[in-house]
Image 1 (cartoon, rainbow, N blue to C red):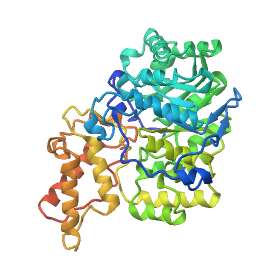
Image 2 (cartoon, rainbow, N blue to C red):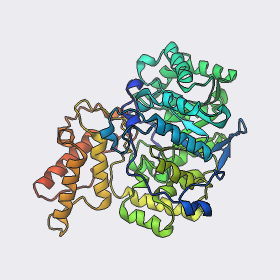
Image 3 (tube, rainbow, N blue to C red):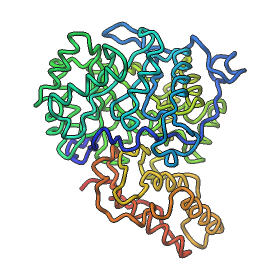
Image 4 (cartoon, rainbow, N blue to C red):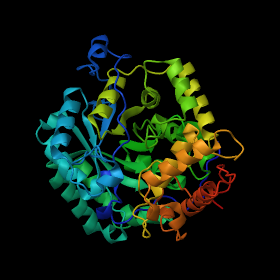
Length: 485
């Protein structure tokens, strides 16, 4: 396995109060819900069953944690059926948040993950309102010390942030507290030390764990593998109760193929297993990419099991690993919640043959040369108004669906050309399209996938210009675009 330990261009984020549009990010078209592969009675009504949730045991506390965890990063907004970009700074629909939280708890979900950074600083407050209507023993709250901005690196600022989380969540203790996005920054190790060690903040958090104000302490990893290895090498000192990692069937062995500064999930999970540390999983769908596979690959999954959705395969993959405590999903719509409940009520673990089948699908997916964008919007806002995620999402969608024309002599060229260009103008306003990028590079340090965003925008701009002129166009990525020099 090729583990790159030299990358210094990992995730770095701006002021957490400017959470870069995370909170208004709505998922795409809701999936069709089917419980056909789960409880027979539920299948008849297309409703998930009650009392069938799969649980994993926290080895420290002995408490049962729902395998499906509710990620509170993309909460529904007023007018939530509009696109995320149309929604902008729309008001969070608290009534809908309450309804979905109630439904989740009724169906066995008890793990809710939030952060001071999510939803532009509003997620903890809205989560606190929804959960405080239930008995405290009915749910576990996970939140984070999201001190990304250097202005928040002092001990006092960190303590204030943690105390404010307790206030917003309306609790006197936190079940799971994470050091947020470890491994980011131009100098990831120096940034980690400045955020948590040099200021004594980690010592403070360890004290809060001793007092029971924090019941489980861990970290979420997004970046330089050297920092991940360092924290695990000090497990005897810190005694991490859990670690949050990205794991899905594409990242399991091929994260490094997509970008040679990424680390395969096989390594991350394996290091946790060695130390008997439970894993919390983020990005089981890679920001939705594994729910919207290219048609030929989606058809492969549907042919193998016509009653299972494409997304459910990815959730079953993540949940099959025995040391996984919970799998997080940001469920903006009730339809998403119901489908995921069906998948984990109960979980039908994948067989070894099915795991190998999915890893074969992943190998094919890599060959599509799509841009590894998860639509997380950490790159936003662009100072020049470019809608970076919308451009990448449209490009990937057309490439995956076969609507990215190449040779002009192809009989489908003009049909595909029109579909691409019309869809581009509908998805992205002209003044926010790729040709307006000036290559400033301010977005690059904020991308958790380490995409060389200006180069990719330049490539798409050239491609669009060739289509407008009715010329041959190339969609293949320059193999060096996403390789760090």
